[in-house]
Image 1: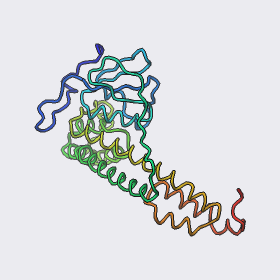
Image 2: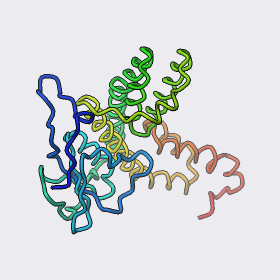
Image 3: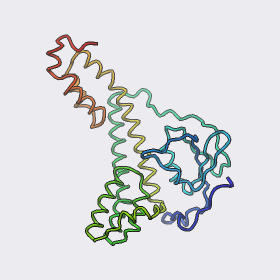
Image 4: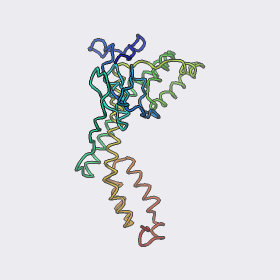
Length: 275
């Protein structure tokens, strides 16, 4: 991969404790279609040390850290992103996404799966707060706003980043720092160390896991919800709500109970809602 840019001293990753120095080259590979979307919270191409357009229409990316490569993949798993062999000179054709649908899953099992995924995401968020937010605020309290801003800019666009940024601005105001916006615009993102890269990877994977668990749960709940609607069975729907963990599907059912299946609706349609 001749056009991979060597890492300079500013962007050299830090070594893990007890693991010696991190690799200075970029052997870890991934590829994505050239028309991939990078909007919203998706990981950006800037995470890669180098990139190359391949004849098959895929972009081959080189990463200095395996954890950063895996984090990048977690954010583009729905866009035919795939890992490539280490030091691969070309991107291979898309191999097809592995099936992640849980076959033969019961409703109760889907509840348990969602609860476990939610707990793992909460743990991943806590780690993100520890390695990003806490350090950002510690640096801000020491009036090291350049370093604090650099670390903030290395966070993905998500609620955690907005929360950390808001608290950092509060600290800057308290310390009389009036140039915080200029600093934030000027400073480059802080290079990732192993802990922060791993936190990003685990957070990205946890977000995907929770989404899959939510989709599977909703798929199993949907025919039960529709049956309750057809029979105007408020008690049946309330039972489903009571059993379902706090989630988007539960919110959907609560909205149906309050609006679509309100007692006033039953008075208007005593035989049940029109098909």
